[in-house]
Image 1 (tube, helix red, strand yellow):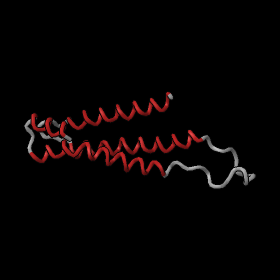
Image 2 (tube, one colour):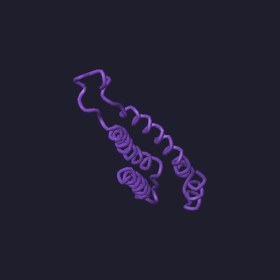
Image 3 (cartoon, rainbow, N blue to C red):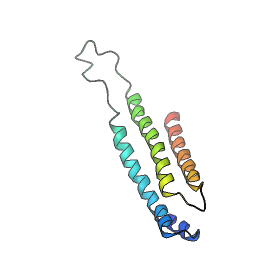
Length: 119
């Protein structure tokens, strides 16, 4: 938040635009909480106990179940980051600045996806 305020001050932006740069980190972390909460709802197995039901089928791999929630979270995070960047980092003097911030965010999301995929 401090870095956003200093950068906006040095760029000579008006008060309303500065507040967007200051609130941006707070909104990103709020998005993290919401996306993680939604992703948790996708982490579930088939109903029933495989030891007690003969027609249960093959049990799912626990890692695949966790990855499903992670992938949902990643997709929602990318969509949410675009709207947060577009809304709060849209500067009249620098019309494509929000795209630069969004691309940096997407690079971070892709790197985290690759770390999970590789490990």
